[in-house]
Amino acid sequence: MSLLAGLLVALFVLGLREAGLLEPLELQLYDWLVRSRPEPVGPDPRLALIAITEEDIDNQGGQYPISDATLVTALDRLIQQHPRAIGLDIYRNYQVPPGRREELEGLLAKNRHIITVMRVGGLHVRGVPPPSVLEGTEQVGFSDVLVDDDGIIRRALLYLESNGQVVTAFGMRLAQLYLKAEGISPQPDPSDPGKLRLGPTTLEPFQASDGGYIRADARGYQILLNFKGGGVEPATFSLTALLSGQVAPDVIRDKVVLIGVRADSVPDDIYTPYGYMRGVTLHGQIVSQLLRAALDGDAPIATASELQEILYTLLWGLLGGAFGLWGRSSGRFALGIAGGLVLLGLTVFFAFWQDWWIPSVPPALAWVLSASLVTASALNQERKERAVLMRLFSRYVSPEVAKAIWQQRDQFLEGGRPRPQKMIVTVLFTDLKGYTSAAEKMDPRALMDWMNSYVETMAQAVMRHGGVIDDYAGDGIKANFGAPLPRSTDQAISQDAVNAVSCALVMEREWRQLNERWQAQGLPTVGMRIGIGTGEVIAGSLGSPERLKYTTVGDTVNIAARLGSHDMDQLAPASQADQCRILIDEATLQFLGGRFETQLIGEMSLKGKEHPLITYRVLGRVED
Image (cartoon, rainbow, N blue to C red; front, side):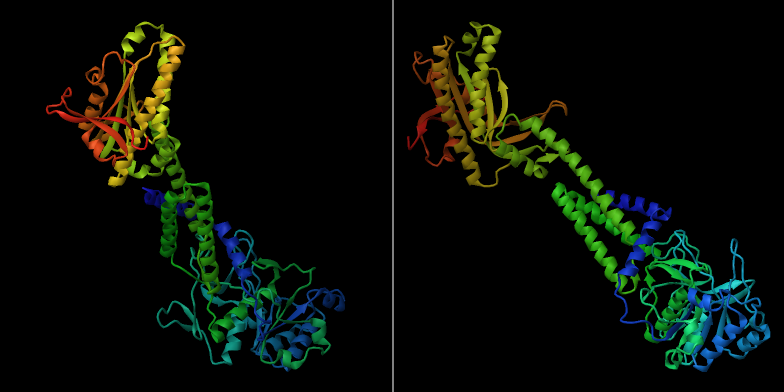
């Protein structure tokens, strides 16, 4: 039942996930995982950045965009230092004087390793064309980025279909130029031609429900950005430093150089797991990731299939359901829940360090909810069982026996009530001689006070000796020693018989003291008869759920009852009406181990018994 509950809870959590309610939290955890990894020792040595700062704009007379003349000069300086690729992350679809447009376009067309940006645009974003001289060439890459609903960029578009044609991303163009010198070009994966391969690495295309995403925009060919080194800046120089010759040639040679704006007055704000970042820096991240994949075998972040993620969540739901049965105490529950979450967190954490993104919110939620539900259900069931047990036993057993009953309730209860069982029990009955005549002489209140003093005294004796009060019948008490928890050894059965006889001797002593007190108060005195029998009984509960009664039935019970009610006048002179007499059967004697002084009475014919019963009278303890 607990596993079924865990399964249902896991299915409920999967429903929440499918509705997209867990995606925001999952993506926040993804951002934390990205930031938690150790940073590289230094920046990517294959990249350099020329940043147009606020100071650069001031040096250009406060003009932005920078003029065509300044841009031509900057590009000339870079070309002379022989970079493998130059990425111009500045829209240049119009003339910016001073300078001649033709000169800039000629420079761009002549140098095939210069890549410029365009923007494809979309429903709410206006497209921006590339420089007209480069339109339709491989020197153009789009700069469009995918922004999640929370405003954060976590994915990179490599290819996109626009107006019936496939266009390539700005970062992908730059990476291709760099890799061309290494003899590497994009290839279809041998095992799946629909996937792109760079060097030894297959770039798995992002799917709409990868990782923590649900029905994300998966158009084009996308990969998850891992932002390795996202907190480390590449080698960066200002435009003024480049124009003034302060950038050493070896800083630029054979590298990918990106030119972009980082001035605060020019809006180019984007947000990543590392927080605020400028567009040119993001493109540098994309280029770096592609180069690492092709040259270092550093694959993008991988994700499990949707089926595997579902099964993983179901597993944690089942584990939570199984744990719920164990974590019934608040301490164990808190420790177990925390331990499970720590294990889950460590699994997700170390998997991410190995470039695997395992969703953590659905399994964590399934674990906590299923464990909580099953624990709450188990505690509620325990409360009901405890109520049943306490209703049956709390007033008639010692705290130690009540605790033992509760600890062993799993083998004792069935269907919310005590399970019928065969067991060896020692049964004790008491009966008062002279009760009827005494009751006729007292008013009701005095009679009840008189009887309660007797019953309370005898019940305390029973509980002190580990017995269970079974019933009060008029002037008699029935007690069981060895129930409700079955005894499994002869030693335990023997101890029950010893406890019952010891209890009877204490009852005798208490009875004498009661008689002395009653006599002093002018109240009637009575004699007492005790019968004890040991043997097999059937123990269980009788009655409706509202009025259950735990009792024992069987021949042993009948023997003890007959011994307890047997007329003591057959054993002692009638003048000793106040005497107490304890009778036991032969089975009880065999378990006493010679601890008590007994007197053989002989064979006695008891009512309801076909054959005479050998009976003994208990006189006291041997040591006494």
